[in-house]
Image (cartoon, rainbow, N blue to C red; front, side, top):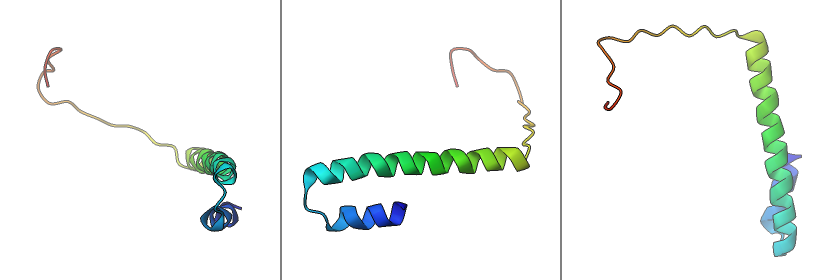
Length: 61
């Protein structure tokens, strides 16, 4: 679906149609990304391990 809409957008000279296709493409890509992140989080539990050397200053890097 994403490729088909992209091809239609590529060959379409109508500005209003390309705006509609842009919204559809953004929604489809957002949905794909959410599903991909959900599947990754479902099967790969990430445990963060971090260590800070030295002291941190609140007003500086």
